[in-house]
Image (cartoon, rainbow, N blue to C red):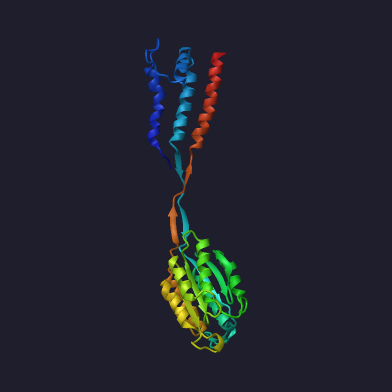
Amino acid sequence: MVYLTHPVLLALIALPLVIYYLLPSGKRSETPIRVPTIPLLKRKVRRGSRSVFISAFLTFAALVLAAARPVQTLPELEVRTSGHNFVLAVDLSASMTLGDMQSDDGSEISRIDAVKAALARFISLRPDDRIALEAFGDHAYMMSPLTSDHELLLNFVKELEPGLAGALSSTGEAISLGVTTLARQTSGGKGVIILVSDGRDTVGATPPAAAAGFAKSRGITVHTVGLGSAGGQDSGNSLDEGDLRDAAYITGGKYFRATSADLLSTIYGNLSGIEASDSGDHYYTPTEELYWIPLLAALLLGFLTAVLIRWHHG
């Protein structure tokens, strides 16, 4: 369907005809109407050049039609939109090598392998969202920026190895980096951080509570997941639930503790449900501007008018 954005302008098409028929045929009046093209056209018409007037009139009509902005509606399109940005922060301290996470078949696997499986599940549950991957140990690093390329993201998940970012744990720095990443890579700076760790903040310069306050000030929710039991197998890097629980509480998030690979996977599945996606099927009707068609016609008709005038003068 084609419609005009400013249909009222079409009334101007009659203006040359009104002026032409209102102009006196003899001498000019004391207050003549000065319309540059009309007197010339009347002289030409008197000489029998009706074609000049018709061509000029069509040129003017085409210009008015272009100014009215004809628009064509195109077939309706279906678009999938997404509403969330996630930062998945993973503790890669040395204790993540411990093989104390029971899998669904009863065997024990390492903490990092359990985390990898849980992350892969979470990513599969969020096909329309942008997700970033962060690793932290002595310091925090972004392994992948926010991306919709989940195949690429899963490749980065496979590369997660304890010690990659140092042997200790900097939970506060990890939260701060997640907030900064969301602020820089999203239009409104909003998003969700999901952080998993099996130890206390041992080296970071930023306390987890302070980092959580920073996240809250930016409208970012932090969910935290603790691995193992308080005290754990690794006495040098035991689970500090207090820091993780406080970081979640301050931002309005939730804290979970996972003691098995199956429970960890369930937790990430639950987190996907908590942060319900705003994505879905939306429809819109695209349009195409057609003003260039009458504008081109006006250009051609104007050229024709000039040729006719020159020919009749000749």
